[in-house]
Image 1 (cartoon, rainbow, N blue to C red):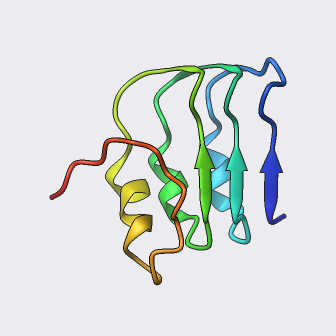
Image 2 (image 1 turned 180 degrees about the vertical axis):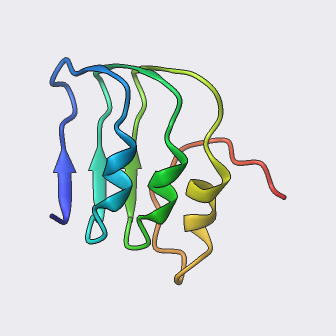
Length: 88
């Protein structure tokens, strides 16, 4: 699976940490739903991820550093991430 685009589907609940096991995922769009909770650090394992859209949900907390690191690791493939990432 390379693309998972579920934006605007009125999804409820939390983002499953198991999504981090989708090793071929390049695009993850979960924006404009009713998701709650924190963003799983397991998404940082998605080394081929180029796009991550999570806006317009009810998520809390900050972007996990493992996810932010995708902007610089493996050639910096993650180019579409609109989030405040703290530098370590």
